[in-house]
Image (cartoon, rainbow, N blue to C red; front, side):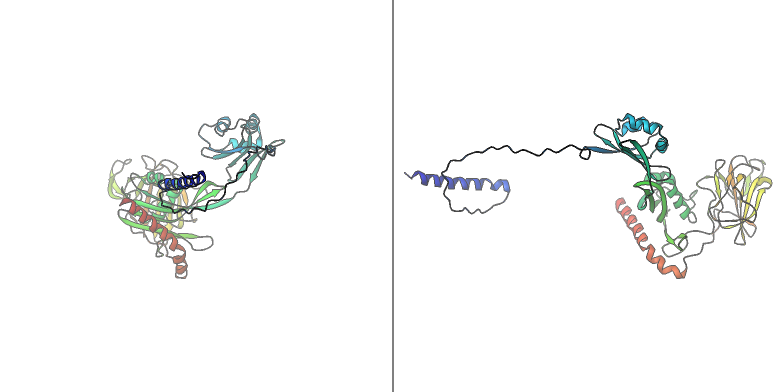
Length: 432
C-alpha cells in the first residue's frame, strides 16, 4: 500500500493530464504542456475577508444628463406641432416660441423637403434646433436660462463630386430621375450634347449616359446642383464624350477629349424637349389658311409662356409684328445666317433691334399670335437668305481649344476622362 502522500501526488498528476487532454478537442490544436515540479502546499488555515469599499458619489449635473439628436424632413401639410412631434419634442414653451416669435419666422416658412435637426433632453424638452433658411444660412435656436434665442451662422459651402449612370427606357427625364439626377443637371447634359443629338427625335431605348457633376452643400445639406465636369452619352451606338475646361479665370466650356468644342455655333432647338408639331416641308396643308403651301421652318408645340432661347450669338435684326408670324424676332449671325422665332406671346424685357444676344439667352415666350391654330413656336434657319431645315442642316462648329492651352487642357481633363472610362467599364461588367 502506497503512502497517502504518494497517492495524493499520483492522483494530482493524473488529474493534470486529464485536464490537458480534455482541452485538446475544444481548442482544435495539439499542445505540449510542461509541468513544473510540485511545490509544497501551505498548511496554514485559509481565511476569507470581506471588506466594504465606499464608492465616490458622482454628482448629476446638466453636462452628464442624456441628450438626443433627431433629424426630420418637412413633409407636405406639416404644422409646427406635427413636425415637433416627429422630432420627439414635448415642450410647450418651445412650441409657443416657434409659433409666435418673429425670430423663428424662417422656421415657419421652411419648404417641403428641408431638413431639421433637434437636440432634446430625456424629458422631451427642446435644447436646440438647427436648419438652413432660404439663403442657405444655418439657423440655430437654443435654450438659455432666460428662454430661447435664435442666431444665424454664415454659409459654409463645400463642393462634392458625384458620379451617375443611366439608361433611356422611355424619355430623358424619366431616365435621369431613375439615376438620381436633378432636372438642372439633366438640362445641362441636354445642352452639352444638343449640337450632336436631337433630343426630340434621336433618342432610342437603350441609349446610355454617364455623368460626373458637382453638388453644392451648405452646412452638410445639399442646396443646389452644380456644374457637370464630364459626361458621356451613347446614342444609337455612337459615344459622345465631353469634359469641362476653365479657359480663363471667369469662363469655361465643354470639349471633346481631344479639344474640339462640344458646342456647335447653333443649338439644334430653341426650346427644351417640346413636341415637333410640324416639320420642314415643301408642301403641307395649312391648318388656318386651309390650303397647301410650303412650310419653311419647324413648329414646336409648347404651352403658352414657354421660354424661347436664341440658338446662336448674334444681333437682333427685327422685333415686332409681321404678317402670319405674329410677334416675331429675327436675329442675324456671322454675316450669312439668320434665325426666326414666330408666334411669340411676348418679348423678353428690353430686347430691341441692334441688341447683341448670346447663345441660350431667353428672347421671348411661346404664344399663338399671327396665323397659328394653337400655341407653338415657329422656328426658321436661313443661310444667305434661304430657309433650310434646321433639323438636318450641317451646323458650323465653335472654336476648338487654343494651341496655347492644349497641354494644360490635356493635363487637367485626364482624370475626368479616366472617371468616365471607369464608369463605362463598370457598367459593361454589370451587363456581362
